[in-house]
Image (tube, rainbow, N blue to C red; front, side, top):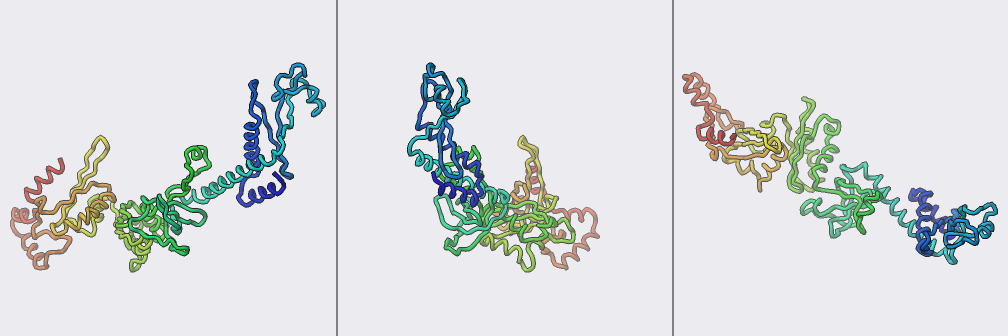
Length: 422
């Protein structure tokens, strides 16, 4: 090594934030390992090698630590030195003492420089990885903005502000296309993993190349963070996100609750003329979003979760099993609403089940033998005003007739319900 190399090391230390003392320790250890390989060992014991680097001149010297012995008892000059020769180095040395003897090979500077270069490059990589880790570990489970640069065998490479991240195919929205040009569109991603490759565990298992940052476009946390960013009532705690059910790229249902009776949680999320929710939809490449008002009453919550379908009745059936409480709900809907309630491919009921935590079984009124007399008022307001007046007149009839006319169920439905609750 030479002075120019030392100057280069000083510049790297300053620009990369590498600890200078640790860097020189690593270079020293690398050169010591090379020396041990060069000199080998003797049958009587291993040679003790020490390396000294002058941090000003770049001069490298190699020493072997030897035991001082009487010349007549000298058996292995690799690990031993005679007293007379030792006193040429240090006049105060005595038999039994240890002394460092310079054994720097000729042209050793080239070997030292090669090892030093490799160590410096490795330390630069470690420093860069540490900087990435320090910059992004605080952003874990949060939104990061980035531009897709290119496609690789595992997914996409995304350019973030200070690093590159991997977007696996499993975390990309179905059929989403990216503008991979130099000035391509910047999108929101959800940071799901930050790897610390400088730990011993990660060093031992890390393959030749592995992304340090992993991002997602499908994680439901992305929806949550986008609403927190867009809706001030959520960010300040007035409105809470209770649960999210998502089929990425297609539809999401989000259950929200207001801690302030004066604040409408749905209106807060939708915004004026849909401005807030439309911005989230745009960020998710057009994914449909249903904002649902959360309720601690499971019947009310399930009815809301199945929106836009209108529900006639919800029957809760919770059973205790070996795996815990099994939460079931039987939902009755009008015949012409059954398809809407289930949704295309079962999506509506599937999302509602995830959102509420209930296993939902949807049946039409005909399927379970459920009938509602004309005297009952439905949410759909199907009854005309003259029918309502007729109901008032019927209320004056004998009690037995009133009970019969107001009975919403028939025996067939009662039997079905008994069987369901077993």
